[in-house]
Image (cartoon, rainbow, N blue to C red; front, side, top):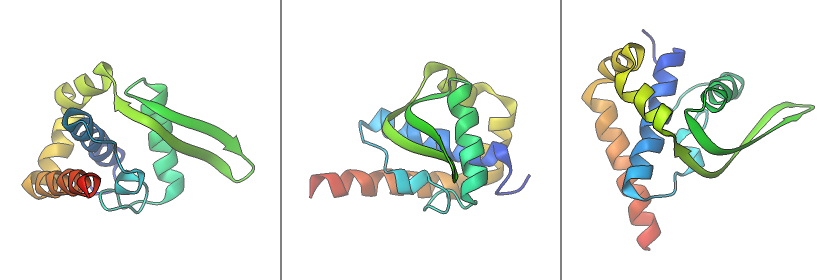
Length: 122
């Protein structure tokens, strides 16, 4: 498995959104966007992955629009659905991605959401 494998990128996005949802924090788009603090990939690939997550019903709260330059995705109260949570927690490929990323990602994820919470209090 590699850091830019689809499963790994999906795991990072779903884990971040789920943690934000559980914490009652509005996800910061730049944290999980292509090239953001959690996801290091190109925009075209990220768009494909997000479209897949949206189409499968794993996330909601996104506005998508085809433009002459490609797919445009914007967040509008993003959430992980129950199906997305189940996929995140029970799918064997998601578990492999979690194991691949290890504790380091979980620490970064927690720190990112905590920083988000701190910025809201300011």
